[in-house]
Length: 154
Image 1 (tube, rainbow, N blue to C red):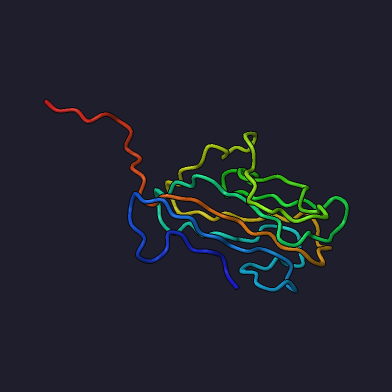
Image 2 (image 1 turned 135 degrees about the horizontal axis):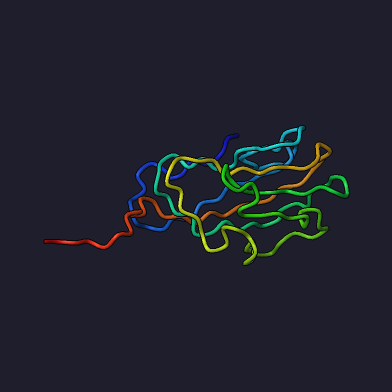
């Protein structure tokens, strides 16, 4: 079990890719990244090269998390710890039938350009997690041009 590495081997520059990573309690089946028994950050996605644009990060609750009443999952990166998600809805008693957007209030709701390597991480607020899993769907483009100045000639 390990974090998802993006971009993947053989992926072309300028094309959109969608990949998934399953995160959950260590005892759940089919997870890629296990939440630890301690609070803090757990890397779920490694961005292994500069100029990767993340268009969106959606979630689907597969198995409701069982934890204390104040349990919350935060998803972000080194620059903004809750850039993608700040959510207490992981404690819901139902599963999501479809993937859910973070909404327009998230800092990265319109996407985020990584100009250096980085890590997208889940931060869990409690150690008392005894079950549950969520699937994250990341949509990204490799090799985005960061030179936004107009071309000039003399």
